[in-house]
Amino acid sequence: MLGGWEGPERPSGDAPGGPDGLSEDGDRRRAVLAAAALAGHQAAETARPVLESLLAMDVDGQRATPLQVVRGLVRFPTAVLEAAGVPALRRDRFAEERFPDDPYGLTPASLGAVDPALTEPSLVWGAAKALAHRRRHRPPTNY
Image 1 (tube, rainbow, N blue to C red):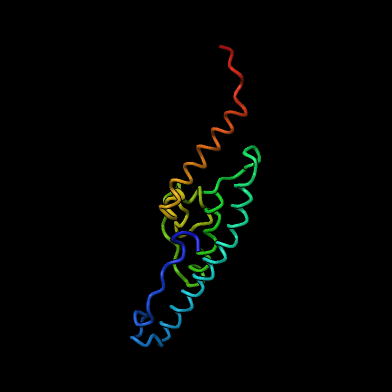
Image 2 (image 1 turned 90 degrees about the vertical axis):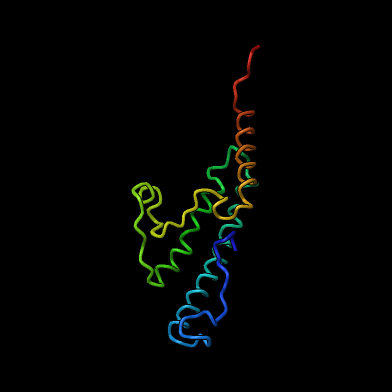
C-alpha cells in the first residue's frame, strides 16, 4: 500500500443489495475493490525499487523526484476506474495539459497529499538535494 491510495474495505453488509452482499451489484463492488487492492499492491511494488534506486543515487544522477515517481503510479488506480466504467472527470485546462493520462484527477500535488506523514521527509529530501547540489556546483567565492 502506498499512503492512502488503497482505501479501507467496508464490511459486506454495506454492499449494495442488502446485508448478505450477494446481489450482482455486491459482486461487482467486491470485484472492483479486489482490483483496487491489487492495483495498490502493484503500485507499491513498482514504486519501491524505483524510489530505493533514486534515493541511493548521487545527487547529480537524480533525474526525477520522488513526487514524479509517485505521480507515475496513477496509472494503476486509473486502470481500475476505467475497467469499472467510471466516467472521466471534467478537469481544468492546466490538469489536462500537465497530466493527460490522468482522467480522474488522481495525480497528487505533493507527497503530503498522498500521506501527510510524507510532507516533512519530502521537504527534507528536497532541501538536502538542493544544498548538496549548491555546495558541489557553486563557484568558489573570493572574499
